[in-house]
Image (cartoon, rainbow, N blue to C red; front, side, top):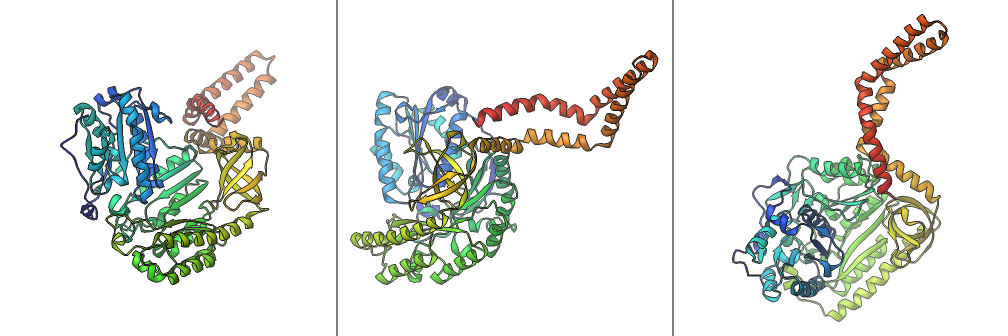
Length: 579
C-alpha cells in the first residue's frame, strides 16, 4: 500500500488547547457505498489495551465495522481487518503494542487486501505515528482518540486510493452522539459522561492523548442509560477521566451528583462510576451515594501517594490530610463502603519519609484492594524531566507496599466470610468450567459452583472462605428459582411488555369498560335463564353481541389486542436470549 501524503499528525502542545466552542454532533450512521461493497462479509478483529475508556472505544469501532457488513472474529489469523487499540499510560503497554503490530505481517503477506488499523492513546504522542508507518509498512490507517466516529470514511479513503493514512487530530471540538455500538457484554455497560481531563498531573499523559475535559449533555447520558435499563442490563459504569468535574464546562448548573442521582432513579440494579478525583468529591456526591441502594457500596478513590510533599510534585490538588478527611466523611455516611485506590511507587524525588507516609496512609485507610504501579516516565510530561529514582529502590518499595496492600485486602475479605452477598455472575471460571465467577456489589471477586445459565444474573452467594484476592462461596438459593426471577426481571424491563401491562391496568380501571363488562355478564346470564323463551333469548343475545362489539371497539381494548401478537414474539425472544 502506498504511503499517504495527506497526513494529519498530532502535536502534544496543541493538545493542551481548549477549543473555543464544543458542539454536539448527531452521527447519521452512514456507510460509504464503496466501502460497504468492499467489506461486506469479511471478518474483523480488535485487540484493546488499557482502561475502560479504550474498551468503550472498541465497542464503538466494532459497531461501525458491523454497520459496514463485517463480522467479528476472535482469531486474529482469520481477520481481513484488524484494529489495535493502544494505551499510553505505561511504557510496557506501548511495547506490547509494537509486538502486536509485528504479528500481523503474516496477515498482510497472505492477503494483500488485509487492512490494519492502529488507534488509541499512543497514536496521540508526538512522532509515534510516522515512526510506525516507516517501521511497519503493512499499517493501513492510524487514528487517534478523537476520530473513532470517522473510522468508516477514513477507511473508505484508504481503500479507494490504495494509500495508507494517518489521521490524528490533536484535540476535538465536538461531542458525537448516536454512535453505533457492539457492547462486549449483554448485562454490564460502560457509559461515557465526559472525555478528556484538565488536571495535568505531572506524571500523566492523558490530557495530551484524550484532550481537555468535555462533558456530554445530561439528557444524552440519561437517555443512553434509560435504553440500557430497558434492554435489561444489570450494571452501568459511568466513565470519565474525572467524573467529579462533570458538568463544569456546561455552565448550566449540571454536576455529577445530580447526574448520578438521575441515573440511579432509572432503577438499574447496579450503578457505579470511574474515576473520582479526591478534592472534587463533594458532600452532595456522598449524600447521593448513601441515598440510593442501587449505587454500589464501592468507590475507587485514587490517592497516588500518602505524602503531601510528593502529591505537590505530582500536581495533585489535595493534601494527605484533606484526602483522609474525605475518607472519614465517606465512611460516616456509608459505613459498609469498600475503598480501592491507585498508588505510584518511586515517583521522582520520593524520599524514604515520603514512602513511609504512603505506607502509613494505606494502613490507616485499610483499602479493600489497590492498583500499585512503579513510576514509569512518559515523554512530554513534566515528571519525565525530574530526577529519576534508582530502579532497585523503586522495586524494593513496591514489594513493601504490596505486602501492606495484601494485608488490608485479606482483612477486608475476611469480614465477608459467613455473610451472603448479591453477586453479578460474569460466567464460568477460566480455570474450572464447573465454577462460576462474579462480583459482589463491593467489587470483590467471588467464585462458587453453579450452572452456566446463571451468567448475567444477580444471585445470592454465601461466602465460605477467602483466598485474599478472591472469595469462595455457595449459592444461597435454588438456581432454577433464580433463573425464573431473571425471566421476570427481563419481562419487567421490556418496553413493549410495559406498554401491554399499562394498557391492561388501564382497562381494568376504566369505568366505561367495567360497565360494558357488567352488561356482558348480565346479558349472558339472561340468555341462559330464557333459553326456552326464544323471543327473550334472541333479545338478550342481541344485547350480548352488541356489548361484545362495543368492548372490542373500545380504543384501549383494541390497542391491547394489537399488541398481543407482538408481546408473544417478544416473550419468545426473551426466553431465547437468556437460555
